[in-house]
Image (cartoon, rainbow, N blue to C red; front, top):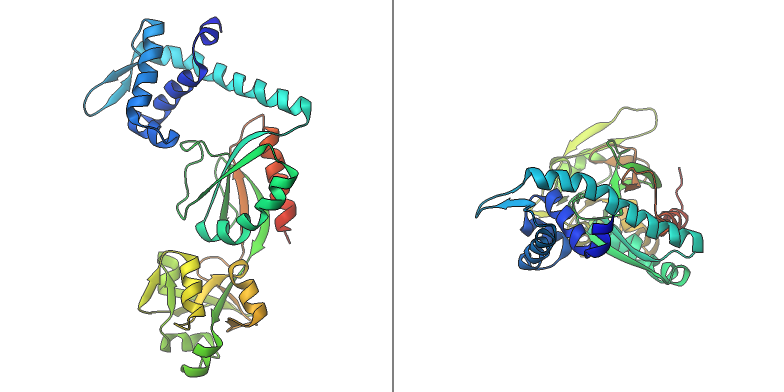
Length: 306
């Protein structure tokens, strides 16, 4: 512990991150800094210790035996230091610090960003860093506190809490429906130029079911395939064709008539019928207050209907 007190704890955290990521470059990407800065921090720690923690070559990086022994003791101490800081904030009942949150681009834009003003008013000392991504970012590798995922109930090592149920609807603009071929039953989608999301399940067939009946699958095709739900919504608003989108994304469009729910009496999906927005966070014994209040805020603001 005396050694940690004499050293820059940020440099020690960089050493631990390099070991976790497996390279200076990967650690630099997580920190958004130049790899040379990471290399200098590691070299400083090695100089202070008087031993080499990593073996470098032009193509690889490996932990030395001495490095493994040191990191085995270092990482728990760094975690304890973080916990001590969080506990001090907990005692003061004043949540503060940075919370890193990732979710899909469309969900961030539609459901999270509109909440930021209220969140800032309630928690002015929490910096909420949002990382919109349609890829499922690794929480540990990217130092992310929370993720919101749109899926059936998640499995794995992360703790999950339902924020709200989600459903999918086939929607199209009134102009498109007024000038296109008939579209009153799902099988007629085969006669339409459908707007498709660039995921395997969404781009080949859509599924439907009604009360008391088994699901049916309808092949879909179309010349427009987009890997972003916001862009698909825009294309539908412009009258380019029917599209399968989440209810939270098109709710306002349906209310004001900009889009029409083509099959209002049917459940629609491309994967599972029962899906939700889930908030996920790493399983650990201590949850910082800044993270806990963020979870509670999102749960209340998004009003789960489960």
